[in-house]
Image 1 (cartoon, protein in one colour):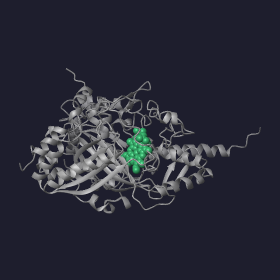
Image 2 (cartoon, helix red, strand yellow):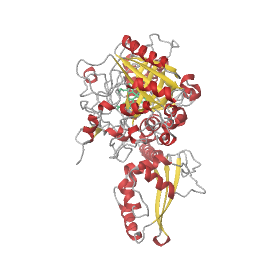
Image 3 (cartoon, helix red, strand yellow):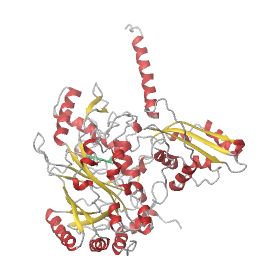
Image 4 (tube, protein in one colour):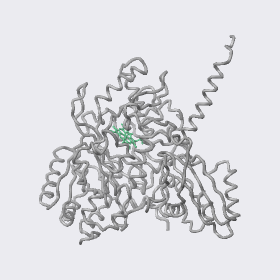
Length: 160
Length: 463
Ligand code: HEM
């Protein structure tokens, strides 16, 4: 297997991925419905991948192709494995509408398919490349706690 | 017809090498490494050994042998046996590269970097690993004599390195903890099911792991057969074995416990020193888990296998009983990473190591080499051992402990930190590295039939 498609991210901890895949004839509407359902789902399968910063799916060319872009923590290989192991049904529901989809499991053919459809980025920029999704979440949690703490300090002393 | 995978494994125990699914529980061992200079004579030698290799067949009461022998091959070893390119290429990438090439992933930097390894352990000469385990040193020596005579008679079979290992007189590893308590249980391995060894499921129960996690050719936790090299018969009933010689800085560790207890609680009395030691590991030295007894050691819990592994961290989300960064919580987070996180059951390892070197009696370092022969078994080195080492031991992101490493065995560099709920300043700072790497390699431990065929040259390019 060629490592060629492994993203050429200039950053150590964050990786980008762009996939462009042909949609099966006449299935674009159905695919659009699947994506709309994922968007509003309470327990969206995407939430199970706790390393994704942003992800988007766009149906292009009047339903001919599906564009997927994502930014995530860690390496390409591990990210794909996460996908394949944790949310295979979710992937099948979306990319099952694309030509040649091998299924999210087993891993080897899935990895090959992604490799084949990946488009390398010409430029990739990240504002905080050192911070993972969890670090951001933890920092936000601290921020909220600090604010509460400061607010508590600012209160006039309670008379007993 | 649906075949129960567990039953199939059980029927194959005679073809699987020993000490993988079940530990031998023998106090002494010798790990001998050989280089093969010629494929044909190497194969002939391997053939002689294969007759005496110990299988996973269970011993009945009273017929536990006095010594055992097992054989594994590195990628260089498979090359040296003359396997054709296509067969070699079908092995997983990390195995083909070998441990030294994976140093970045493993945190083997600084003094632990391959350049600093023991000379014999850093070369390309570790082709074949022969492990002898024994009940007594006498039995070990007599088995070794046989091995030496067979090897000396073989042309081009050269001993590269020998590592002995033995449980210290304390019965613990060198930092003073009982080890080898928690091991994944495997469906169909014919071992009694103890609570806490499998995967946590509802209603407080545990489910053994599927055999494909540890033996090639069986269904794993993903519901698929574990990937094997081709031809499949070469992989069937085999698995991968990670060998790592880990040096332990015992005097530094003891000193650290005292000074850190002083910093955290203003005292270095033994009670606090022991509490700190337990917090680093997640178990008291006796093996009693903090999750079940957070304030004091409890021998009754430690010694009861029905209880001493039956906990899951789920009721302790902030690590008040067992810190989130403690060694055993990192190495096996059990039920603490919620369902949206990494599938813990795909990252379990069987540990089959044994300490080496003499117990340190003195306060200060005596300059002697002591540590752990760390052995990890699994059907995928990258998904199991390497993942645990990289993501759980040496990174903290998955646990929301960004920048923290395992305080006990992690690749700390003197600036390490550990979050420790409890003391008024709930952190340990300036953590150093207590465990350094002296060398190691990845091995493939074939099934017995596959080993015989390898020895016969059945799959070799030159025969
Ligand atoms: C010199 C180095 C090491 C020492 C002294 C050491 C010691 C210990 C001790 C005392 C325990 C608790 C007893 C038990 O549950 O068996 C333990 C558990 C464990 N260790 Fe280590 N360890 C070392 C290195 C490692 C490394 C490098 C890894 C993984 C890459 C690892 C993985 C584990 C696992 C998976 C457990 C069991 C956790 C559980 O299931 O609860 N250890 N170790």
